[in-house]
Image 1 (cartoon, rainbow, N blue to C red):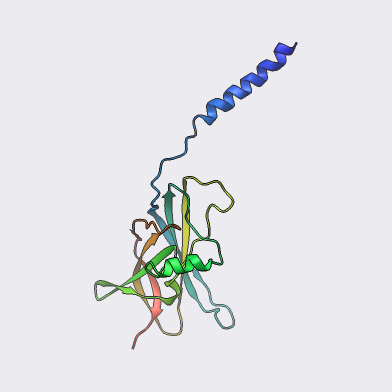
Image 2 (image 1 turned 90 degrees about the horizontal axis):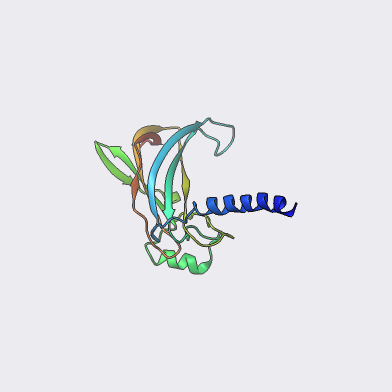
Length: 182
């Protein structure tokens, strides 16, 4: 009788061991690597009141891989981390650069909202190790009372807590509104 009870348990343990051997931790570089996955735009219609004007929201999706899983920071950012980023290029854990097409040439448009950007800690409370996934970055463009649509593209890069910097990826081109210049 005991033998009949033990056999199903041994069978289950055998299956679990077999399946667990199929999952090996990936061997990624400790320097983050990113790839452009896509971008979409949706328009938010105007509401009533200040700050409720019509605007386009552009969401950029980037895939990432990192061997030591140290992407992102505790928010609010500890003072030591803030000083580290400031002394090394004065940008946070990711950077988005905006380029718009003017006279058949892409010109970088510096936007104050993109000066210092941070990714929340992606592995908080989890064991250290390789990670991969997708990040969505959002950019908002107001229509205002006088605007012009410009073909626009973005360049994105990320860096981890020890300042290993990823490759730079460039998005497709999309038309978004900018204030008209006189």
